[in-house]
Image 1 (cartoon, rainbow, N blue to C red):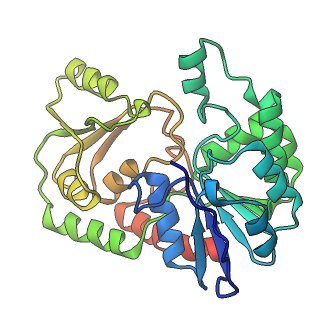
Image 2 (cartoon, rainbow, N blue to C red):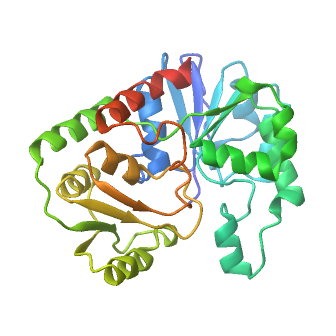
Length: 298
């Protein structure tokens, strides 16, 4: 879809936000995290898509901070122009932009070869873009450690440049989760599997089904629900089986399930499962996430 360029940046904007999609376009985890962060923005902001960013916009808004979310839509030239323009920008990294497929596992599936994108011009371009950023926010310690493994030079950057933001929730979402925990103290004994027609390959619905069948667990496949309906459904289950087929940097469903007291069956592709905060109690986990949006702006 071709988007009209933004010509009237205007001085009434304190921040420029750029992302492939927003929560109003698609209620994915990355989009919900960005939306929760924007709800706590200390000023006015202009929202744009990569296709709207041109030299005029960069020049007219270079005196304001930019927040850049998932932006696979940026061209090489756009990345270079932003990085060399003098703009003060921060990047929110929700997956693996250093891979042309945004996932080393998907890279292997599509090409039959192990991902070596970090050794190519593409990988070096992303590394340079992150090096010039004021801050790069990752979704989990596991994701950040994988980036540092791919790019050892990141270990030499100043500590406050690379931070773990984590999946971020609005206060309304956290309140809903708390209310649902009270509403459904008794669970239905079944295991929840995320599925449906729009479910990404990475969620590995079939792998979760196979696990339940092998272990004689009663399960239900759930998908195609709006976020509020999805949480209402999830709250009624005994547990969640979630075995992603590739690195999932901080899947919200695992956090939502833990906050509502469900048991979890996960694999090591759930990259936050070994993070220092992940095994907090449900109430402590809610408190931890209640402060993340403010943490981003500080």
